[in-house]
Image (cartoon, rainbow, N blue to C red; front, side, top):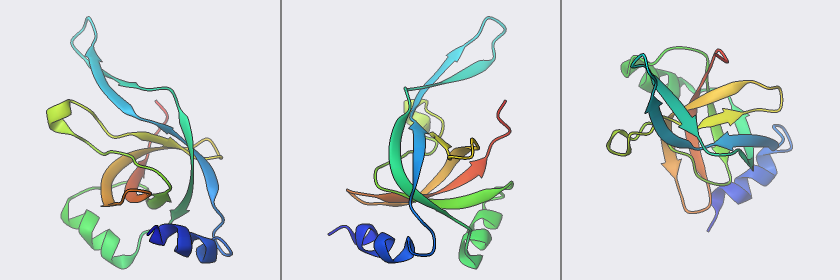
Length: 124
């Protein structure tokens, strides 16, 4: 049962679903000067909701010493954060306003949907 699908219908009356562009991390390459350059697959679209962090979310991230502008995002689909054994960084999410968010931590992963923390990137 897709509980997010049920809840999203009610929540979208206040916070509408938006189309997000997702670029899945495919690892990285090493440039001539030795720096690592992340690589990503072609963007795909997914419906999702961007929400502010709850007090519990803030406490959790503070304990992990994760800082920056953060949001919790719910999507119909899957994303990944850092996966060290696979040599992959987090996936990139682009919102309709052009802002780029890095998947910091997947909080919930279900067959049809997931929620995750995302950190605003500087676009560099």
